[in-house]
Image 1 (cartoon, rainbow, N blue to C red):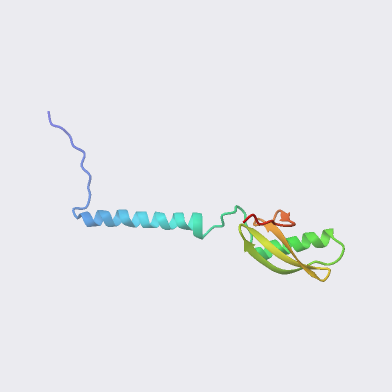
Image 2 (image 1 turned 45 degrees about the horizontal axis):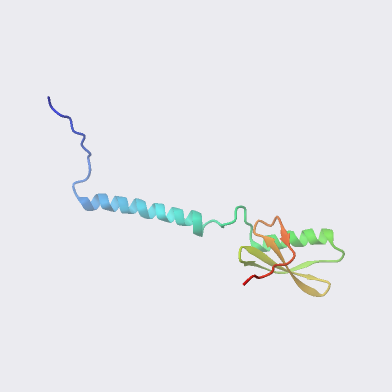
Length: 110
């Protein structure tokens, strides 16, 4: 009885196969880097700092006496620091990166 063997039709040159495998690894690595590090923010639903600042200013203007204006918005340790001008003072207020919550103060622990 003859035995049947499974044969793979691989290229005769080993460098060709290794080049294809290496190309697949590089492409997969680039995609993973983009998804987890480069292309997307670590916070689900994050918005730009200026947009979070404008949202906060709109909220404050609807809920305080007087006028609040945006001076500066910057990213800081996973949150945004929003500097607002209110009653002749600049006041730092903080928001989450998705712009859904604001934090009145932040206390450094280090």
